Structure formats: C-alpha cells, structure tokens
Length: 87
Image (cartoon, rainbow, N blue to C red; front, side, top):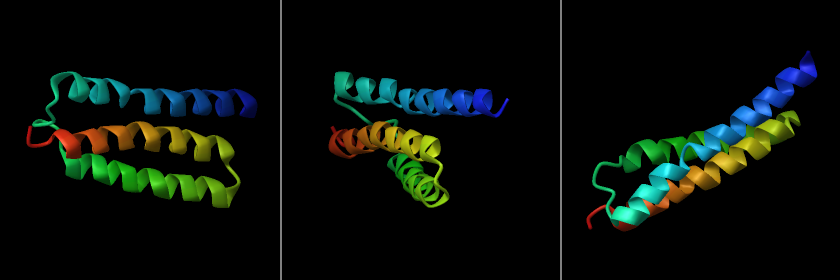
C-alpha cells in the first residue's frame, strides 16, 4: 500500500508541475501577461523552494524532485509574467 501511495504522490507531483505549462505557453503566444498575478506566482515559487528544502531535509526525494519540477515550471510562468507584464 505504501508503494502505491508513493507512486501516486510522484505522479501527482509531475501533474502539478505540468499544470503550469499552459500558462507559460499562453504568455509566450500572446506576448502578454496582463491577467497574471506576479505576486501569486512569486508566492508559489517561495512555497516550492521551501518544499524542495523540506524534501531534502526529510530525505523525501519524491517530494524534493517533484517540487524542483514544479519550481521550474512555475518559475517559467513567473519569469514570462515579469518580462511580458506591461506589453
């Protein structure tokens, strides 16, 4: 049972990261981030950095790498939003 839950958690971490990709693609396609909250995505980035550290300290590498993937995907939204916010 523990292995099944661990597997499902790992899959959910990848899905979590993948959910940020459409927002990045939309910003890049429209060259606009007027409806994107940089504060919200910045907050997500901070929470993900804490999640990475927590996973590392706890030795939970599924959590740690899942949060790294999420941080990269969410970070791309944040980066694009900063670049295209006023365009």
